[in-house]
Length: 122
Length: 177
Image (tube, rainbow over all chains, first blue to last red; front, side):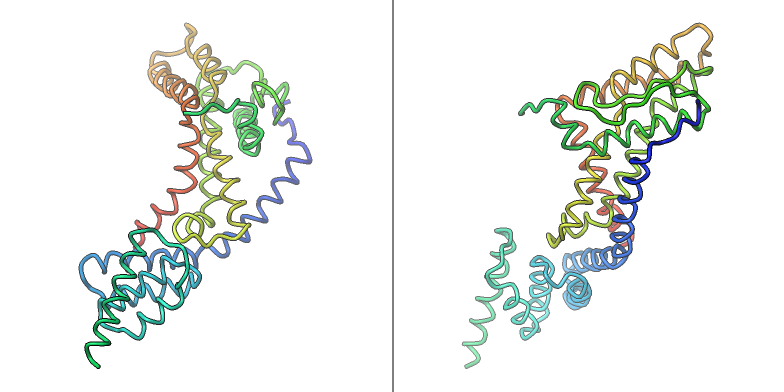
């Protein structure tokens, strides 16, 4: 009685879930390292180390090339470290994408500033 | 605050109910307590149940009662772990990721033992044969279980499920960064 067996459908469902989780877990280390790089980028950005932030955000962008947030932060770090070509490339990539109001304002401000500096040089 | 009937929530998060009952059964098996009947899921109240023989020691009843809290919390976190970063932090989730999030949250939000579990536990530990030490350990647990069970009326179970499933990856990132 104590060892009343689990029904077959429970075994089947468990195997299915285990398989799905296994597939996702295989991909997890890459996602985790990308998220860690992003977190390090944010910390570096907060203390004004924009070169370090750019390097970390670039690693995160390699892992999440479709993330508007990652690409935008990479572009902003590049802008603050005056690497305008990288910044412009990043901002071009996310043009037209949805973003939070604050992030959009930051990106638009950086784009305007880069344009102003570019026209001042001419 | 909006009200959704319990059976509807249970149906939408049925994997959690199944895991909850499996956890009770698993702990019955671990403590060699005979299981008389199991319902893993049904459309009704309760959505699932495990009927077992009376336990010989209060300790066994405590473990059987809190088994789902341990199993559902750990399994919910593991299942959603690979998907939460993509979906929550970077908004680049695939259908597989959303499936895992639903599964993980469903499992974790059924971690709280029910009022039925609390009542069984309270009855088991209130007997004269139970030592004062066991009562000292068990009564706070019964209290927490009641708080959790009644808290589900104000979505505490959902908040807990979301917290376990979505905050664990964030904690990992903070830890390793």
